[in-house]
Image (cartoon, rainbow, N blue to C red; front, side, top):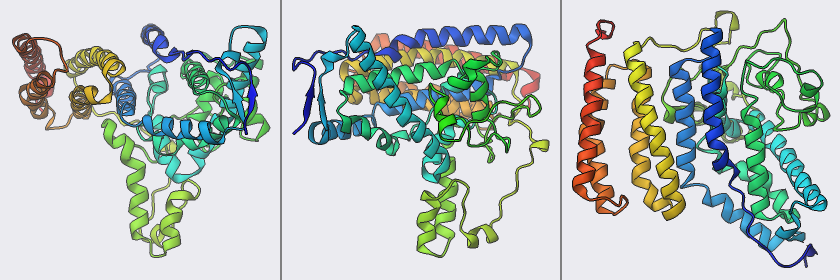
Length: 433
């Protein structure tokens, strides 16, 4: 029997704060880019920023097809195992209601701390979370760099909230507040903030979290409160004598957002299938991050990290190609917004074909950013074959409410302009290689 808290009448208070925050994310990102250019700080590179935003785009759109799993589990736990029957109506704007909201936010932030800490300390969880840390720059685009495989295990850490009986709408909302807060701390343009750094997560102590310096590794896991790190012994202040080196000890060295999500799983699988003992085959996945079976470590030793020789992954590309990628990404952003609306109105099935169209585009960005020899050929195939075929399929499935001749005209125009721009970029002398 569950204990009831609050009136029995419920109401829909699901606040889609993340959707409301997106325009502000974009505005702040553009402002930071302008400030970075004005100061000449060099905190932004086109390839790194596009790759981070591509990973975020992939995470968001892939989530349309995976987010249902944790929701089903949460609903089941809430209906069958919740200790308290906490009514949604108690979460209002009265002083008592605001205290309930604050308590829910603190509860989420506490669970987030342990989720985040375990995501660094357990290999299979790091395989998912590492995507967020692969960027070797640190700016607001880094905040958008998110994993596409978090749905596999991340939900486990928030089960206590539903065992308590927090309504799903409340949990969704405080999750959004926590994520929105974390956006602004991904910057190098704000320095130390005194007492604030000791209580709350700030740009300074979160820069430490993204560092690969030995003294900084596995520190500062908090989402909103840095107090959790102080309580549980994981806090590290940013030191003037130890400049932060961003990135991960095993560099991604790729601009492919799909490979970014698979890299750590790949090298864990490499060790798991080559070690002899079964307990080590399991241990590869569930033991401390960085642990390797002795037999595999002996046969396949890893090179030790030397930050003194660290160089950012930065294949040369021409300004013309960078402009082409930025222009195509701008088109992609329009597509992201449209797919989001389509998903909200008609569900995941309707969003599948447009997502495929978008994912192919993201893969193409990676090829161009790496100055891959097959980038131009793949882009031509995308524009002349993949885009028209998927548009035809979307029309046949009535995903787009427009006559086929109109769709064909816009598709032809997009492909023609894109190919012309690609041809013009290819005429530049520096693209001869």
